[in-house]
Every structure is written in structure tokens, then in C-alpha cells.
Image 1 (cartoon, rainbow over the protein chains, first blue to last red):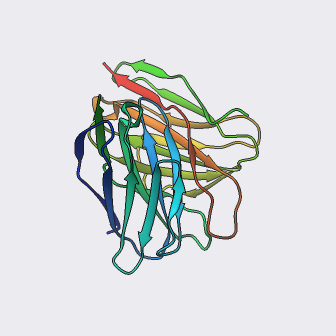
Image 2: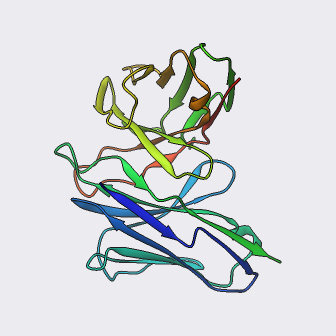
Length: 115
Length: 116
């Protein structure tokens, strides 16, 4: 059965700290891995990763994928209280003869950044 | 540049009633996905639709649940004869057509369904 496991499930840090969130997966016909940030409402898209070893970066956030070891990490440097959210990792597998398909989500990491 | 629009934001139903959840995808997006999120759980895939077609409904219960995405108008997720266990947040996502690696799915704010 396809699965995505995130760790830790929750994390409390202070402003300015650097955090690393982990996501491992077991999926047949892997296509891509995506990270989302969920506050009170819609999950907001952060990154989509398809190739190993290529870091994606956006401001203080960065992410990288290791397709050999089947995991990804999401780094946040110089954390701010506004980074407090649930960070979701999702994997897309190819199915139904095309590139599109549903996402398989992990349970998320709840990050709390204290002032 | 409207995002994915879901309504209603909150829906309260009594056991045995029907619930209808609506989703309008982002402009230019032809793929719609429905997910369910239970407390302390991740998002679980339910159904994937394109215009007038159900592509994958492997995550949707066989009974009481149905979905459609008509040629005109929003996608509808319908739950008949609701039970307490249907209480959850239902999220809709959309993406554009892609024949390569796929496109990110963009999510709406969800509908929080409460069953009394």
C-alpha cells in the first residue's frame, strides 16, 4: 500500500531557529513530491520536486528530494511566528495511463514558532 | 485571479439528510480532486474528475457518496443520508491539463461538514 510518513508530528521552536521537517514515502510509480503549508484554511502550495538532489528554494524555505532513499526534507531558516502551521508532504504516483493523479498525503508536521 | 472556490464554508446537517458541497476550480483548470480531512489525520483522496468524466473514484465510499463535474457549473460532491462519521473538512483542489510531470494541485478553503 502506498504511504507517506512525516516526522516529527509536532515541533515547537523559538523565533530565529532553523527547522528540518522530514517526509519518507513508499509509492509505486513515483512521479513527484509536493510540500504544502496549511494554516486555518486551504493548504498552500510550496514546492514540487521531481528530481533527486536539486534543491528548490523560496526565501527562507528550501526543500530537496532523495529518490534513492525515498525521502524529502523541508528546511526553514530564521523561523518567524508566521511560519506556525501544519506542513503537509504529498506524493503523486502515475496512474490511469497519464501523468495526473491523486496525491497521497502524510499526516503533517505541526510547527509552532514561539516569539 | 480567483483561486479555488468552495461553498458553503460550513454546513450543518442532521443524520439522514443530504449534503451538497460545491467547488469551482481555478480559471483554466480542468481537473478537480476532492479530499477529506478528519481531525488529526492527513488529507485522504476521494475522487478525481475532469469535465463530465470521473477519472478515479477509488477513494470514495461506494454507498451514499457521489461526485460530478458537469460541462457547465461547479463540481458537486453529494453525500446522501449523512451519518455522524461523515463529519469532516472536505477540500477541493484543481490543476490544469498536463501531459508531462503533472501540475501542482491548488486547494480551496474547504467545507466543514458537521452532522448533528
